[in-house]
Image (cartoon, rainbow, N blue to C red; front, side, top):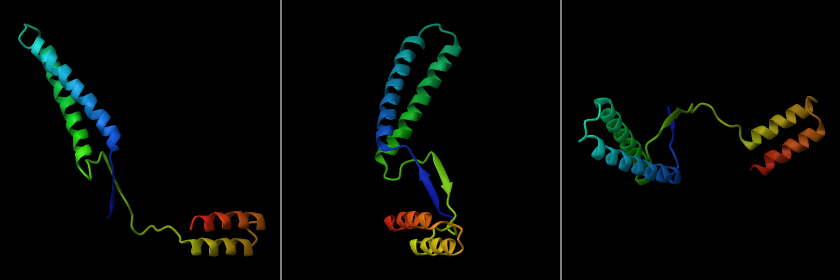
Length: 119
């Protein structure tokens, strides 16, 4: 079954990568100043977690920028048996509805124009 891959656009990934780099720099700065001190272990763990998460976010968005396919953040299965009716089929259906008087002549003309303009 075919799949659609949804990922952030390149400009969004570029912005997120820059923000991620800034957050990594902040994390490294905190690590340099806190790890040598006698700070509680929880502070050190939070700083390490902050830095690793920021690095992961940054790497994800850099991969989206440099890769042609990118890294999908959502994948949608597409049913190939579902098809969109052709313009000819849509016009035929409109004529049937008009013949059965289920739509008015005005509505028929309006919808016919929409179908023809969409070709």
